[in-house]
Length: 431
Ligand code: 4AD
Ligand code: MG
Figure 1 (cartoon, rainbow, N blue to C red):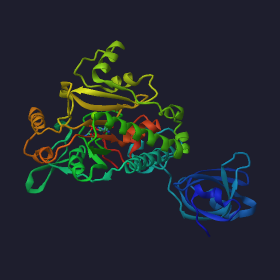
Figure 2: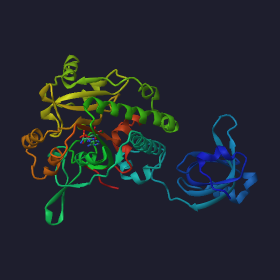
Figure 3: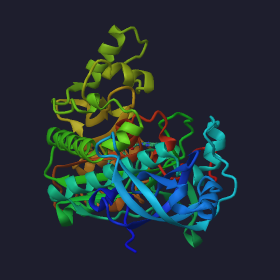
Figure 4: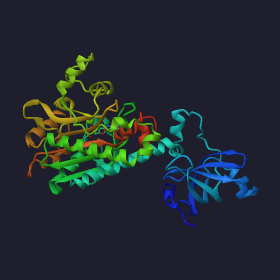
């Protein structure tokens, strides 16, 4: 018997095939039992008809519990009323395992319960949809970068020093060498990579000992850092913009079913072809104050401010030229104003907040050394990074995109804990 994926049923109408998967639920009515069968690729309604199966087999099917694993043989048919919906008339069923009573039922469960059962929660329809969108975003980012000539360059996870400020470092005892720190971003290593390969990116887990308990913070999340030689601040933002547009188009094309399950208003995502506005930090502060915020020049933005700054905008907004005190040591100073840096944050729409942080990098040895000292960072551990400014220093830029925040935004999921298979937060490391 030919085993096929449920998503491929359309190509096998009228032909006897076998499907392998799990029972999402069953419903019976007289001589009929309807099974919703899922196999990871899609779902289908499989129909057992008592007169054609016989008493015994029908009784076995009737006793199937939720999440039991089965192999069903039958003939796919087009739904009599719904185009592009298929059903399977069951001829034979093999039960692989009868599942015990499943803890996650149709009733409402608290989020703590669901998180404790994350290993099972992953099977639910909504989680399935989000994780498939995550796959699209992940592969979309890579496709775009490969098209643009970026070479994959894997940065280390054990690092000797901080990339993004010392307050969010995870320390790990490291043999006789004292402590290592889990990487907060591979950026500094990518800057070495571009001097060999021109354009590079990494994509992997990064770690922040964030004390924030918000819906936008994880302690372990996935970041794609990209870095390019001879690219300056403006071009850096244009690359980010076309990357985002590429990924959104891909999700709108490939994840229609998933977006529908999530009840995402895709009309909002479809408007992404307009240019993304760029406003300076100073303009942003003014806008916020005019809208009644009590934010002051020099403050960083919180969730509320980010939401206010994109209110009414159909597309994400870049905030550029930040005061150097509130940004990382490696950002290049603005040649027009020594107090500012050529950094940008890309704020997504609908309150989903910052999804990309990027900048042109400081390429002058002495200024960079001054910045390292001013931020009380260790010079010795950063000497290799300073070296890059000694041997053929060039203007260069890069950015880092948070995978989970981007997935949350595209999926319309309010909390990023649902956008990663096993979320890590301050108060949760199980399962
Ligand atoms: O803005 P960040 O801190 O930038 C950097 O790490 C740079 N070194 C990147 C670079 O230039 N190569 O982080 C980048 C993105 C943020 O915009 C956000 O999307 C995400 O990473 N992010 C988080 N996502 C989930 N949980 C957290 N705690 C996050 N912190 C940052
Ligand atoms: Mg940032």
